Image 1 (tube, one colour):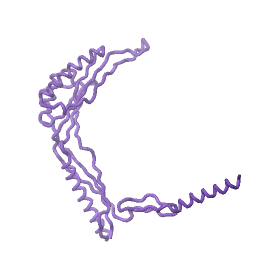
Image 2 (cartoon, helix red, strand yellow):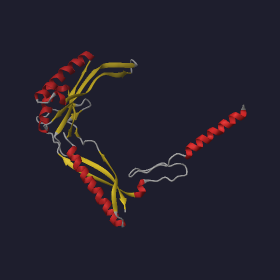
Image 3 (cartoon, rainbow, N blue to C red):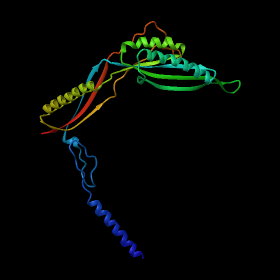
Image 4 (tube, helix red, strand yellow):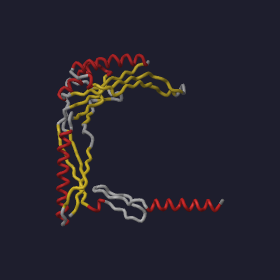
Length: 260
């Protein structure tokens, strides 16, 4: 029986070797670097066959959206009391937001949390429950930035000491045109760079064989809103001034040219 086993093993090795010998060599596509090759072959990179350049461009816009992050925070001896006070204050906040023309679809709950407040007691050698804290925060989107200050003041007046304003952020409703402008500038910058490098090195640019773009997230400008103490109590003000400033949009491209 042993001679038969040896013959079968040799046959299997021959089959595996033949399959490896028939494996096709890697193919390089225009603009796609080859990073692997068959045994005994040469690793080829498309980078060595052309000119790679990067370019970046920016555009700017005034924000047309402001998002207010606000809500209430209640601390009471029991969960029921904390919930009741928080619910009452939040109802007043919501009434203000809706009375100012903010649609329900533009108000989104971001956080609802019930937290037990405790403290270690050295004399009793155990944790003592001090009470409970209920936090309810929402994001309110405004399409009129000029109204933001007045809305904040109204919310503070309605919700009283339980109101918390975590901050504000600015954005644009349609960022596509600004990214398009930034992209055009990035391509132009990369093209100019490629021409300069070609002229300086005495070669001629061929056709574009690869292009890629990377853009960041929609820019958001955030500002904190008058907070003080460890409890984040809002400092009331007769008039709150809100400035949107300017947003920056950036695009970066990578282009590969053939060299003639």
